[in-house]
Image 1 (tube, one colour):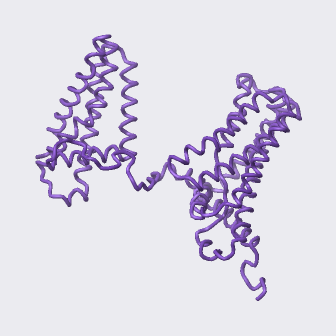
Image 2: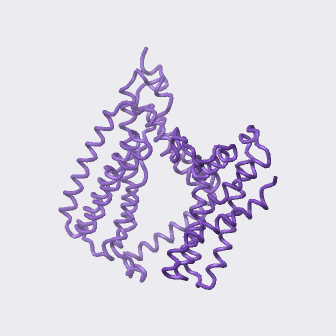
Image 3: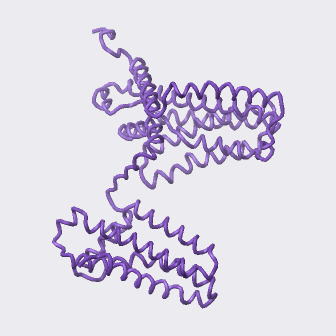
Length: 416
């Protein structure tokens, strides 16, 4: 059978079809949030006005606010741009089944996907440099050769960083990924920032550094083509990169899904937390672990603690105790609401706990969860007010306040 009898006779035709689908996908995502008719009324006048300002930056005086912007801000913003983004390979889950016997096709798709991603990165950099060109030449005094050298350094550094970061993301997971991203992304961007800052008047050195980054890009490109056993990670990372625009548009609409954890990040062995072996004690320990293991609840606890510490620190001494009582009461109210939500969960309803047992367990939970907050806030009240005596008394005062306020809210909020 001839190749023309198939829908995609070559790997190149399959890649072009997927690239066109990728463009339509991104366009449809943008169209869900932007009306093109309305957008034209913004783009056309904005483009004309921007072109007028751009022409004025070349022929007239630069704006007065530009004199207050140091040169280091430009390469810093470029370094941040280089550190973001990734590689789009245009792989799909079905390739594992339908292209398993055509490894050359998969390599062709991966190679062209990397070339496409690096080309898009280079075009973004060129556009940004085109906008910044009058400021670089007329404002910071860079020569034409210096601008070209900085452009070459930025493009090659961006290509190297994208490929190195991609290699780490498809081979490492969890905390190890973050550690490996330091030498793969942060270090090259830091070197780029230093070279762009100190060699801006030495175009030859910039071109030499760009050649080094280009060599790293070629090496990383060849390593990626030889990489095996990462197909599912490739598909997962590819999907994450393609959905970036959708993630930005839906950031304020949907909550970010929690990552799947095979082991909790704290209390990994589920060891007993409280000395009591009674059912109320085990129930209370489960609530404490649920509070600390839930990222949303734990983050809210830390955020409220930070805001409370700042508030107590900035108010006068005469108002610190009043604010301390108010903030501790607010934290106790939120913790009591957390306990009612936890104890009223459908899963907890399976267990044969009575109202009295739930109230007793909540009475144990409240002081334990409230005490760290109360002690930290007590330190910012007692130390400024009583000096060295405050260092000695803030722990017992905070612990007593946590126990007392926690039990008061338990008595009023938890029905028996």
